[in-house]
Image 1 (tube, rainbow, N blue to C red):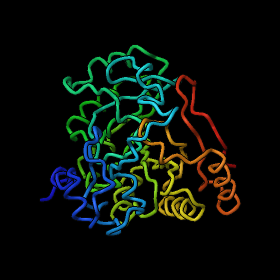
Image 2 (cartoon, helix red, strand yellow):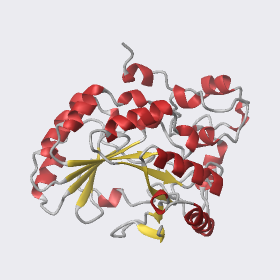
Image 3 (cartoon, rainbow, N blue to C red):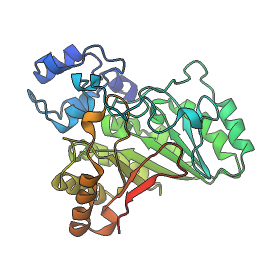
Length: 321
């Protein structure tokens, strides 16, 4: 039996092997990046060969543009470090907190705002975090993030979730994950059984930026989540050269909606150091959203937001109707 762990071991982590696979001249590849290449094979197979402007390739291949120093782009653009209550628990907003479950991901996005986060990797338990959550009765929702929470084994996830589920003042558990986009096999029967047994209401938020990321295997895996009565939503990050056109965003949002996935937020790029080449000015983002509003049903138009360090919530740049 081929498990998701075995599939994950097929990920491209060597730039030479990826360049050879994609028939790329490696001249533009950043070969000594501190943030390593990590790309699932199934996504690499979707990339057009011998081209530098493929929307999937742009998201994952380290390039020399990451060495550009641009004012305003910092290692911690969203203020995660200052908001930590412990090595794994972040609390920024009223009523909810975020568990940084792991440093591991199914894939490494070049614009990841947590690429410089000093993850706790020695302590594999969540004892301190669970205790802090138990003591804070203002919390009603916990967000599992990382890295990617689905990088954890089902047993580790079960142990954590069962502890959280036993805390009376918690009402909701939210997964933030990119895993199903690259390795949909991760949504296995054991994981589904774990979700099915939960008391708390679960919300499953994927991160998907381009319609080519969504294929029948991905949507079938997510349909299994939906059949448990769990809403599936999608974050989208607005990225230069990837999805910064009306046509691409419209196709993407409608493809999500056609599969019962709510396009939740269109996120302005978090200004992490090394990602300036991905930034789309807010004026352009507003214009894109205004056009989408005219062309699409209201529920298929995401709200356009950005995260600002120290603010009590995400900032709405433009609210969908």
